[in-house]
Length: 234
Image (cartoon, rainbow, N blue to C red; front, side):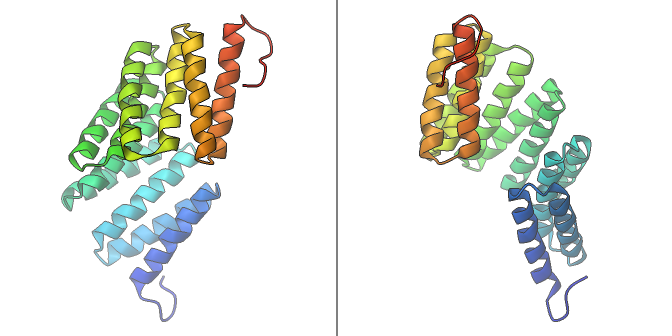
């Protein structure tokens, strides 16, 4: 219920900001509770754009809690709502969220289909970062079924788009996937080169989580390149 003296939509907006804050701090349950209450208030007021944002935040919260089936159902609701209000960007995001949920469930074909749909929608909306992220998701799905060449192709497109958008962390993320695709092909030198480039870019972007991922990938490739054993620092 709205706080005394506060219009319902102001409360919905504040709850959504709170949900985003909880998500950034890793509090998935709290984020889910706040985003669902925000969606309820927006729905009661027939504010569909705000309801859509709240639904998508709920999807993110559910995914953070590894409740992927629920995330997929919520993403489907978000997609339907976005189509109804002709929000291409919102529809693209819902598809991208569904692709990631399918990827987490290791449902490769479903992930590929949703990622392809998301990439097309982002492209039509002129969102290069969104398109690039969807292509990276496709690459990760290809890796799950050992499709190294397909993954490398998708990563190449993703890296190019992230570069056009000036997103260093995005480029770095796709380079890590590129490195893992090279690892699958036993091309450890090429993989290490990609991982090292990712390391530099994550450092430049001050992305600590990405930096750790790049370091772990460098270590993996050094072990493979050396035939096993502990890896030296990247």
